[in-house]
Image (tube, rainbow over all chains, first blue to last red):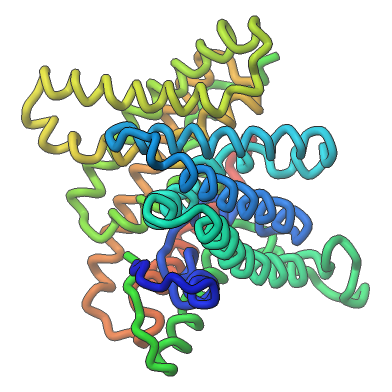
Length: 209
Length: 197
């Protein structure tokens, strides 16, 4: 993606919409789908990703002049792993139940391509505060898509939102929404809708693959 | 303690019912990017099988003989990543020496594998489910084979749908996701046979 836009407002728009990591760049899908069956899991997971993307971007931007170019990928991975370990320990201590639900997916934030991608594409060449902002907004773009998938899955799969029953008791839950395939269908539909709207607005559409 | 699961069931489940890709959503990034081309898919699939089998076994040894005795389990993310990166690097050098043809086929995919979440995911599942050494190796092999099977199937389907006319917004990623959804339904159809978590 182009990083010519250096204004905070433009960065926000790019990361949340025109270059959204999920449906425009097809990054970070791995963890995106597994945690979207319940809203509360998704919320915690995406907050973790926002934190890690923001902080690792900030850290990479601060120490980028100290990192030899050849080993920068390794150093970035270690920085990301450091923040992920913090998230993991905090979750275990304060939210043990959600930590159990999320299982290995917290650890898998390390291999989430969004974080590495932002560190490499943005933080390497921009000042620290702007990088922090870029990381946070990228994380929020990810959060927006995931929360909308989780909203549909929890509402139709369990008739509930954040664990509270909202649909009447006679509601027949859609079993498919609890199972993995629904996540693929929903993300496909979101990608379709997002790209369709962008075509309509005449935005330059980046091909994500 | 290690869960009591027959080896064959574990092997079968990791290929089909609990397919690492379609049921656990791991390794999606390279799955979607590479499946455009059937030959690359084959190469990457084979590389994943080899790397998964080795890293699951090695990480089991590291976890049980180094991290647990030293009480350093919280460092497992970093250690696993380092093990994976070094196994990939070593495999690349060995394949380069042993067979030039194999290197040409697999070589370019090996670096990609380090950042494939399926690899780290299998090691983390192995830790959470407390598999024994043999179970870890079988689980790694089965997951790799399942991944290979899934990417080959998707690459073939995409080749067929490539020429079809679809709405502009749906083209590319959108259609691919929906296709994967149908594949996932087919794989999950095996769940009635056996379910291993």
